[in-house]
Image (cartoon, rainbow, N blue to C red; front, top):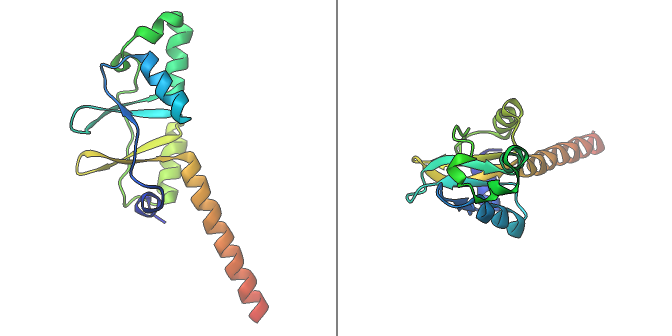
Length: 143
């Protein structure tokens, strides 16, 4: 299964934020939508960073509550690992595991096209395993 297949089922909608927005606004978006990361984009949906809950926790631990007034660009992770629609689930799992993160933006033609979370990957992997088990059971039943 590929990222393209996941996005066909899940959709391409991604919440994003701009580099000059405040952290307090990012926190509100994360809480309201019950998500763990926002992709940071400029006006043409070009990916310039990612802001995760971890990034926010780290800056608050260092700077205190005043960090909520910081702008996203000062807190975000600017070096973003990305994938494209041709990556397989196994490749995405490897990227996430090596980088120790849970969200992977999908890029197409240099612009944000979607996002894959570890939850998406695990859900699809479980579906694959269950389908394989059903096929094995069916094979055994007919043998």
